Image 1 (cartoon, one colour):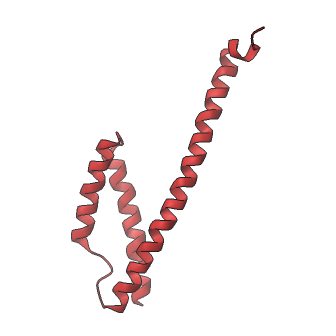
Image 2 (spheres, rainbow, N blue to C red):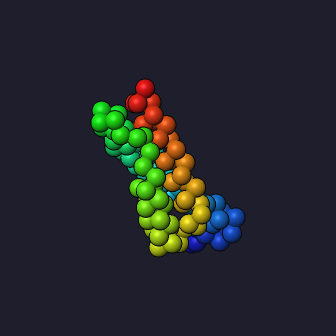
Image 3 (cartoon, one colour):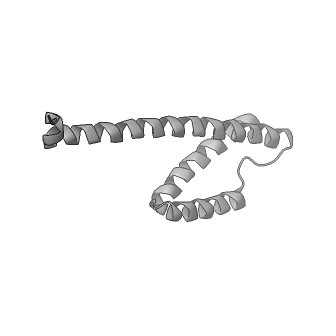
Length: 103
């Protein structure tokens, strides 16, 4: 006896969709926890910079990080332009946090 859902293309598609969505949900959780960990470190950097009168941004490091991320994006088959926009967004948030420590 065969399972009817195995023969039904809509049911099969729904099952595949469910699997993809479960993977997406897990990856979203990984992204959130990874970003939280990253921001813990950048906040510590911000405090250190404020304590030592260092500027909140480091354009040379940012440039290196963007180039590194673009290379990683190419290796991962991810659009490097998207990766750059994403990193620039994160960098701006980090600088904003560093500026808050400077006040």
